[in-house]
Every structure is written in C-alpha cells, then in structure tokens.
Length: 350
Image (cartoon, rainbow, N blue to C red; front, top):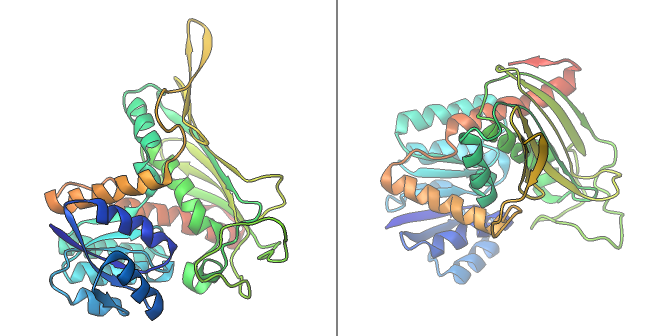
C-alpha cells in the first residue's frame, strides 16, 4: 500500500486525489495547503486526518511514501528537491520548474536519491496519444519532420496566481505551451532541440471587462494583477532537421477557441487534437483514416487517471516512468529559450 500526500489544494489537485482514492494500491494519507479553510474542507471531503499547512512538516512524516505537487509553478522545483531528499517519490505538475537551472537541480536530486520523479505531462497518458504512439513506433508515419500545434483561447486568462508572474513564471507559454511543445516533441521521438525563435505579446491584458461570455477562472481568481503575456509563439528546430511551430494564448481577438496538434511524416500524417486522425497514401490515393475507438478526443479525466496509476506502478515496481525528469529539463530548455528569444529579438541556440 503506497501512502501518498498531496501538496496544494487548488483546482488541479482533485484530478490527482480522485484517482489516488480509486486506486486500491494507494492510501491517500495526507493533504497540505496554505489556506487553512480549504485544507480543512478537503480533509473532511476526502476523509484525510493528516493535514498540514506547511509542506516541510508533511515531508517529515516518515510514513508517507510519495507526494503529488499541485502548487504554484514557482514552488515546484523547491518542493520536489526537498521531497526527494526526504526519501519520497514525486509526481510534479508541469512545468517542472521556472528555469533550466532549477530543473537541473531537480535532476541532480533525482539521481542522488534514486527515487522516482514523474513530470505531469498528462497528455502523454491520453488514450488517443497511446494509440497514435503505437502507429508511430511501428513506422506508419515514417520520419516525422514537421509538427504544428495551437492552443488559442480568445478569452481565458484564469487570473489569480496564473496571471502573477512571480508565482506562475509566465502566462500561456508555461500553462498551455508546455503541453503543446511536449506532446509534439514526445510523438516526434524526442529529438534534441538545437535552436528556438520565439515571440511573446502583452497587448490585451486580463479583459475582465468582457460580459456575457464565461471562461475558466482559477480558484483564487483576482483580476487586479496581470503581468503575464497574452500570446506566445515559437519555431523550434531539432538536431535531426525536424521543426515544430507552436502558438498559445490566454486572450486574443480570435473568432473562437482553437486547439490542434498535427504531425507530418514521410509516409503519413496524423492529428491528435481536436480528434485523432491519420493520413496515408495507398494505390496512388490519399486516405483519411479515423480509428474506431471510444474517445477520439483527449479524455481529461481518463488521462489523469492513467497518469496517476502509472506513477503508482512506477513507485511500487520500480519501473521507469513515461515522463522522466530528463524530459522535464529538455522542455524547460525550449520554453525558457522562447522567452529569451522574445526578449533579445534573436534566435537562441541550445
């Protein structure tokens, strides 16, 4: 029985907590949150009596085997290192850190501790992703040389800590872009990135003045502070000659929200968002292929359940995680380079 603690009680934490509760190999043993009322409410809701408002005290409990980190981005690396040093396995929500230096410190702590650290790249665990990955691994697309991904919100700045760069580290690039970059890079076979050219824009702000259209808001929504970008885009080149173009926004004068992930190879193409689809060529004819599966689109709840169950199995059986710390470091190199390129107006070589 794996005894697990969850650090952070914001909205994302329930997508960790519920799968832990459903997993018969796990005991949800402790919760931690700096908001005493939210902590007490969560303890009562989930029947957990080991409650902490300081993660250091939680880590001192030797009965806890593993933790999920569901806190502000600026605390991810700090808590991860402390947890590893205290002998805990770690599942840390994306992004792994705010800087490459922090990511490397986490990687060093993983190697020193010998414990499992899994980065919260949840889209790797989607059922549609797993199916497409099997086709890619069997060579159905051939060499993938180009990918493009877009996650555009016309109105979707969550406010709260998401829009406070001191806590989030950035806007849509670190919140949405991390998923888009990672899922493309992962499906492309994780080639080594060599250069990044990027742009960020802060033109529209929070847009809390908009009426008659609802949008996602953080648990601690507050529109008074917004110092993160509205929009980011990037062109990433890889050592094998492949390239990736990605753009993401919290707010944009777009007609509608847009989400797509597309891959292009020598033998075929594929989409994973908004629905899984493949393109190939047979008998001099182009074929658009739709797999006959339960969920063509990304199943948010199902992917988190798969992610949590995979983490539990890795902790118990010592298996290698699907999203190791090394991948978290590489993704941070790419994301940080986007900001550096935007700031300097130059392409950044990695």
